[in-house]
Image (spheres, rainbow, N blue to C red):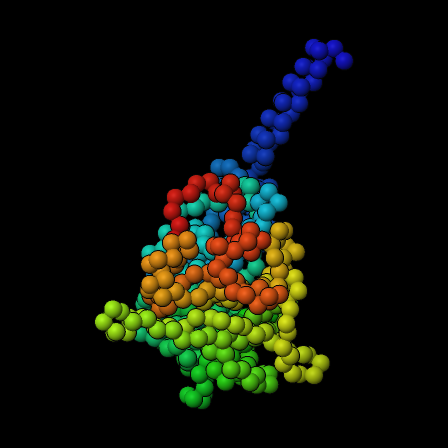
Length: 379
């Protein structure tokens, strides 16, 4: 083909590319509004509005579900970018936007995460939602340990550390749901749209639509110090965590600091056929994430290069460890003090700090740098 003909075809191709790009921006407003009607989530709306100014003006951003200065609605998402996938937590703000956090970190009123996602190059798949209450503030003078949304019109929470209560949107006070004051509740989770809670003695309850607390499953005889409920593939699991006490003394022999360190975990699953709890020794391709405000499960098949059969969690650091462990990314919360993200590999039952683990263990919580428009500071 003559050189002039080749150049002519290249020119036509460039013009067509330019016209195609311009046509996307010049779509009729009626069509853009029609597309907007089929957006399934708030994240889809953000990505839609990020295309260009004409798309942004076609649909407005609905008011945020932001509640107040110390209650943070959040969603857990799978972030996909250039064949990489990782987990992120998106915290809604009162300005109608969101902040990006590691799902294991605890948000607080003054948190700053100066990272803006490039929504044109990233895909966000919503995996779950929840609420976090700033632990430095007593909500209604009663500390909230953990909360979930209840059927779209209120919150069910473990409040005052061990009580179970309901609070409708706009209500000033909690309604106590536990008739027996001797029952101490420890965890709460959403599983297939239903709310389940667990008490300190290993009993699991279901909250029906009339807000009755119904004993649901046989008791688990657990000896660990912490118990978490986790939903995985539509089934309910319990993670029993064992800890040991530690103390630190100053140079004068006075107690300087004390706390607990996690040393082991056991996992139990309900056998639907026999109605009994069965201990499981492997999660196969699944990963459990035990956050302070949400517990959930994902498959590593959706996260290429990541390692399965693991439990990710946070563990408290002593004041001395927090001061001298410079290699660790440390976080701070008013309720638990300094803490670090850790992981338990069920293959060898060894607990590791995520930041100093192998790449396959860190990758699940490591967004690619080029998926952000800018990077300022992040706690």
